[in-house]
Image (cartoon, one colour):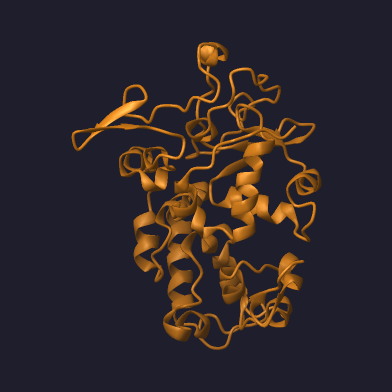
Length: 307
């Protein structure tokens, strides 16, 4: 059953969410309306598509994978079904006090929480018993519904910029920033496109890279920096560091023809699906949100408009 949720102005200015495609962002907001009071729902892409995109020809599974890759949801299983946990759901949503309790197991209870990923602790069942329905949660650091700002009292509403997502709140962001794993500094220094560091830290942490793997990553980056794809148009088609790590691109490079000499890359970097979609290589395609399973939705390097 769909539920009413809050959408704050900060949603549109979240720099981390901006790394996702427009369809993934729309899907993320739609998931809030399908999730229970703890931000959980069943991982059923076809059913989610029917609820959120009944009139659109868009596949939901790649959108869920994209949101999981960027740390907005966690996809897991209780052994018999796939589940989704919307991360930090209770920080930004205030479910109605009469909304039924969640019947889906949390990832913590199943011992399936990946290293470096935080899920907001569950609220006690009685925490909303005395709340007025629809009353917004107070922003951390403020008491009650009012705060003093430049000598003037300001009433906080669900759309207040004081209640925006973490990427717009420096105080929260600094407190929740992940520590750098050993070897990340070497990788980051070698990588030419220094964007999305937080996502890169998460992706690097999942690798649990030892000294040998770190050396392999740095060597692969150094070889790829000399390639035509990475030097073209001033490095415009260099993938984001997190994309490179999550896609295990160091393995693609080690097996690509001409990679070590910086010469023309083999089919691994210029697959047929990317070329047919109008892109020069896979890096240009994936930076535009085009992947092999969605390449039929692109032409001349642009996403086709849907009816």
